[in-house]
Amino acid sequence: MQNTFEKLNWSALEYKEKVQGTDWFWALGVVVVATAITTIIFKNYFFAIFIILGGGLLGYFTVKKPDLVHYELNNRGLKVKDRLFLYENIKHFWVQAYTSTDQATHIEIEPTLFIHTARLFMPVMSVPIDEHLASHIRSIMLSNNVEEKEMREHPGVKIMETLGF
Image 1 (spheres, rainbow, N blue to C red):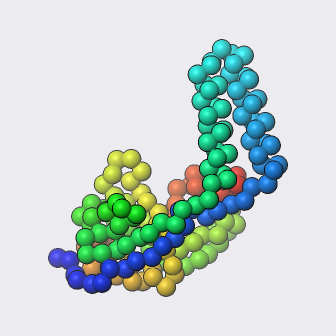
Image 2: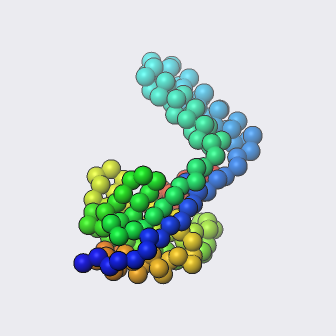
Image 3: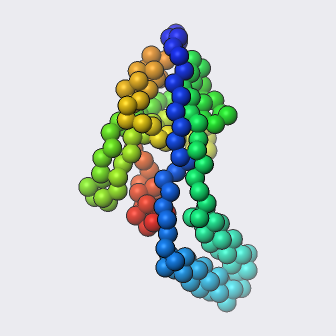
């Protein structure tokens, strides 16, 4: 049974923006060109095109500014932009409530809502939240019979952040 409450709205940047220096772009260019030349030498032209396109997209997304995403927690579920994730399709959730620093990688861990949905592709979503909303979000999810289960970011995310992505 769902409780009635006012909807909870917040906005956050799509991702944490990182400014890369010219050295990073030079390194990207050298790696992409060297890899593409190597694959051409081995007559793997399709992979060379793939490497060049991938490097170009990586450079593009590095300079692209993050969008401001609107989130809404309402009586039916979690709305991200225009997409609604119904409570009955959310398998479990976890609210990482406080800003902290990972001791192993020295990467700052932001307050985040993790939801595991029934989707086949990318079933775990991480949604940035404000610290002051954490307890309210947790109580709303629990009141809508969504199971609470501890989740963390995928180790690949930490690796990518360590590499500067």
